Image (cartoon, rainbow, N blue to C red; front, side):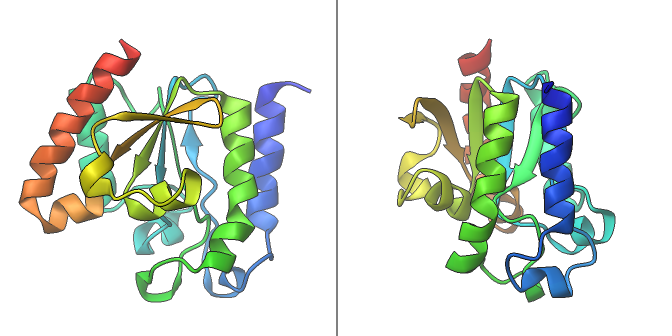
Length: 183
């Protein structure tokens, strides 16, 4: 089976998923989007209101900041793959629960395996702890971390960068460091 078909199957499974209670309250599941040939994959926490409405990842204010930072390092959203740990929005944008993360993680791992990016950018603490374990973003950001034979790059979530301007500057520096990793 070709990779496009494999990814389409995973995305359909996400759209049909009922493994946790979030499927009841969501408007749309948000599998992710981008290039199947992406060298860089971005993984966030969970869909927000705008993402839930549209079925697309990172389309609100956080998405605008992420898109701008991706462009600053010479890439476009079409060249990367963008997704989240959770594929459905938690009510009131609360922090994802362990059972929700565990229900969605197999989908994320399959997306990573199919796309095979050179580097996976983990945006914020939930993405970091869900994918590679308990690390503080404030201590681990701006560096490559290897786990399970893959390269992971940690930075702040764009939502945090919008709330705290200092983090936006740190995130921007991180993105320039990231650029050196895939150039």
